[in-house]
Length: 262
Image 1 (spheres, helix red, strand yellow):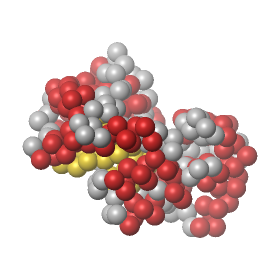
Image 2 (cartoon, helix red, strand yellow):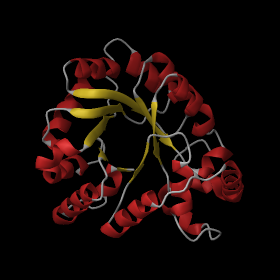
Image 3 (cartoon, helix red, strand yellow):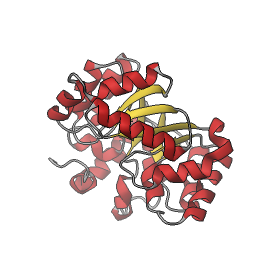
Image 4 (cartoon, helix red, strand yellow):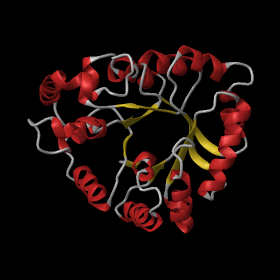
């Protein structure tokens, strides 16, 4: 399980609380920490909180720039904010459209910055992220040997234009590590009265072929609950997964808020 920067962003202006949350996550065994240049304030929180514990974490951030120059500017700002000389994983952020793909892979496009950064030791691995179009992420995987992809992993996905169905087979074929996001579909799970706990969504995600799941936390209670879920994890069998998907299906349109064309 990893700690996502969007949750930390909601604590903006609460340096002490965020410092405590990040270090508590480390104490509990979480070692994947994620942010993005687009998450205003999140990178700075990591820089302040990690300090001497940088060596204990797998640190990642993202750039939404589509040009080489813009992405490199983002990277240097990210490294300053995070107070580190390298990232473990740097990700092309939020690729949504064929136009995004063309810009990223054009001459002077963002992918050139990512390649240069890896060659210079400024990042160890290169990833791509997206939550709108599986076809767009598939095209990215076809054009470049990414190390990872960050995509939505939840039971509502099965109802429409599924990342699980469309991108996971290619990722497995190309040995791309899969990082799951949108695990709890931004709290809409509370409306699903047939489950009283978020744990079912956590179990569903970790039962897929993923390397880790990134979950934002607003407070220590949420953090410790997620760690409890991870430590007591029991994989869902196929029958249980199918039943969960069917139960969620009537709510899928609302749950898939992150897909503009749903």
